[in-house]
Length: 439
Image 1 (cartoon, rainbow, N blue to C red):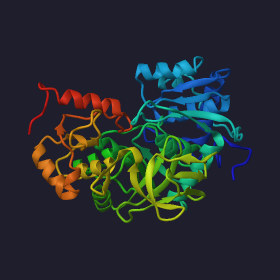
Image 2: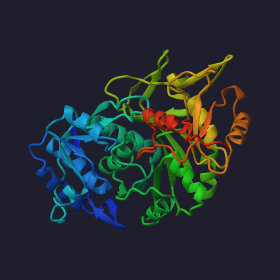
Image 3: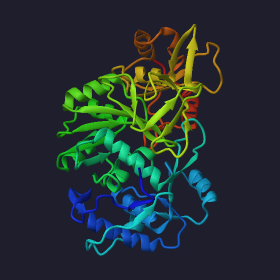
Image 4: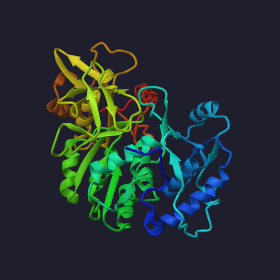
């Protein structure tokens, strides 16, 4: 149970590593001095757009906002239209980036005094949904809820680890990135690398720049890229993936290649992470301690970090109150002749085919005559006919997308997610007579 207030930095020891920058540890005492200086600069502000790319500077700004009682606004995109819509709701918010924070860092003299305590009910952040199924929605987060979520995440993956060095290939503005790198530093006593590597060699270098023990938080697309590039990773205690379904074949390959354990997180911007599984060894998901699902037409999860029950958009097959199998988003289920499959399952099956670099299966905006979904696929060396035939060997042929359209790339955002509006734009452009890729 979280008290009425908790420290800004839990288990505070001035000399313990709080973060890593350029291969060097940043002591917690130095970090607190930086946070204090930025909090002073934010005094009187009601909200801030935290647009920092450097993970350490983001964390300093985030914690400073908590200290100054200024709400952290965490947009997943930098598109002017999206930022303008958010600013309409928060007209007094100040936009801060790496340069703004770096110019206001403290004197680098460690602070020995304990950090301030943050009220449990204080609203500290607003995260936004990805927009994969529509317009991004704001989700208000209280300090108490984030603290409980961090503790549950730590208990699930790091029950016996007193220290952990983290590389995250996802931006901290997303709920997944916020939890696994920023909040684990504030609430969990761990230290994250400031960089956000993207390419496989960058991920390998970032991990090699940290001492053991190490954990990598990444996405299915980036994990697949590392496998395809056959990069050598240093000893990694575990690899954790989220944001999209992880193909079982890729999880198994990663465990064999890098002699580690690969886990998958289930969650959302609305809930934060709430369940996990090891896909190479199990098909069902286990909720975090203290959470449960009510069996209903639309399943509802309650407990843990959730101040009130949340209705899930996914269809679940409940094993019991804390375990389930994920069927897919209720709106994305396909049912033909008594058979059922989700668009996510079809996408995962397509991604598992050799030669496929990226893919997405989706329902087109105009219903086709067959009622089948369509697909965009990045597979330079494969024909659409060969891809369709191979997919028909992996799933029931009645679900094979028609048409299957080849494109050069998919419009993924920084999290590797695909907004439906962007997918439809690419689909329409690719199907125009002059740009249609034949094969």
